[in-house]
Length: 112
Image (cartoon, rainbow, N blue to C red; front, side, top):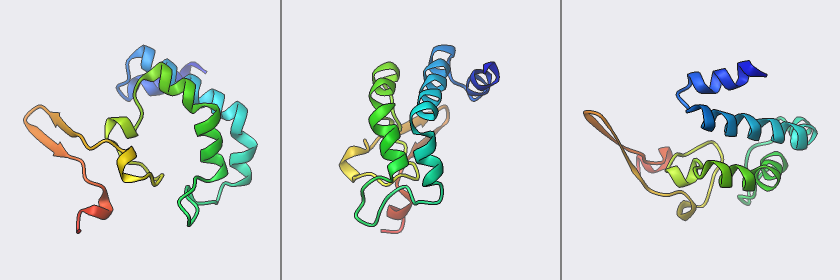
């Protein structure tokens, strides 16, 4: 729906970027909805570090096209998420904003 695209655009995404995110979410819903609903209360990662079946479905069925179309992911942008990833797969970046610098450090590493 157009409200979905508008929501993404209002978050600050460009119109083409909002379209990529919208189509990715729609495709994931079409391909992974039942898997994700069935595993709604499952953690994003198993104790061995593997992805839940919902996250794996999204990674395998929507991820490749999203990565190609967007050219950016949380990992290659240095942004952490609730999905645990091996350290080397998340780029270490310093994000600079006007009048400030934000050094992104994984929350678990802040007190290390």
